[in-house]
Image (tube, rainbow, N blue to C red; front, side, top):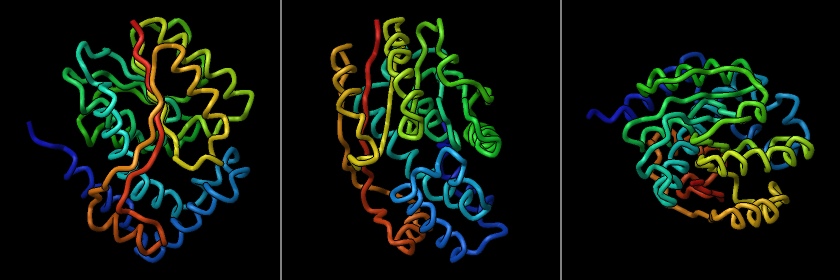
Length: 251
């Protein structure tokens, strides 16, 4: 089988640097990084995707970084072991890379149901799935209602829970654990920085109590040259993939 990832990465660069120069995307990536670390209160208002430069930086830099990290986490926790769920729900899908990374590790590949509030993100996810040869649908829906009554599904929530309000986050934890009790596989991936996820100890304890695991990851990165160059130019360190994860497999 032909590996679709090199073609996807080349197409990603052509798609997002067609009308922007690398210095323009670098400045946008710096602004985006600052937003995630220092001005997080603006995230619920859609500030991360409000300009063409930020959207390009989000897709072209964070897309491959998150794809590679999630792929390694899926491998590390054994989330793609048979029998593979037929459906994979990608909550707060962004550009669709987390669900895609998980699905590509599975045989047979599950059908992806990608959910996001942002219209640009939904369109970008549709493009990602098509480019990587994955079947699925992309829509706007309430993240919690998407899981109600579902059994035997895989659920990816990558870099999503930290952007929810406290009320939304508190409601999401029992919904995810209920999906696990119904035979689902639940994978949560978040940044390693503790200040971004102060709620993590509570969630980690809940996942462990349900028979799951909590892990931290520091992995050597093998980013495409242009992606790594952009990261270095923006003052980021593209040599290492870092993150933390929660995983539980029901049934």
